[in-house]
Length: 158
Image (cartoon, rainbow, N blue to C red; front, side, top):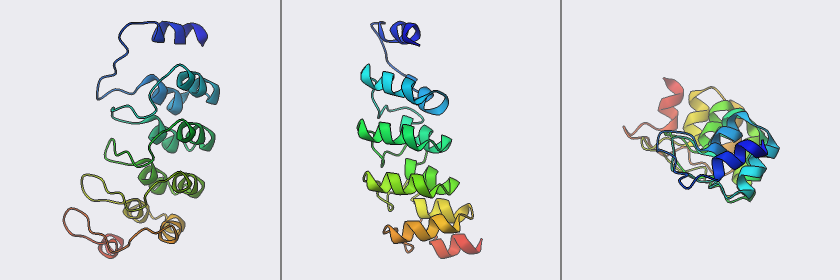
């Protein structure tokens, strides 16, 4: 791993194109906790402007340890990429432990994406009733409207 990291980080240009995953995001998605830590220590940005952030990848994977390390390194739990925030991803999957962790680190349950969807809408649209209850307890507003003015009640009836 150290050889691979040396090859990656000893290059003069480390730019990541907008639609690719950063090395840290790939490590969060497919690697180990140790690899994630090594990328952070090497100076990898926990908030790259790419299609998916490392934190969102950790949420998709459901890895609480990697998510915690990323949050401690300054990952923004409210950053919208790939149409979702990390909290929306955790809510979509119904991962209540991840939801709690993200809220503890400042995730706003009322943050919206480009279509004005919230984590509450993502959870309800995927039948994650326990996550819906949890998000409401954390302050999610069930009266917010999406981009076509649908509320949570409408989404639940569709």
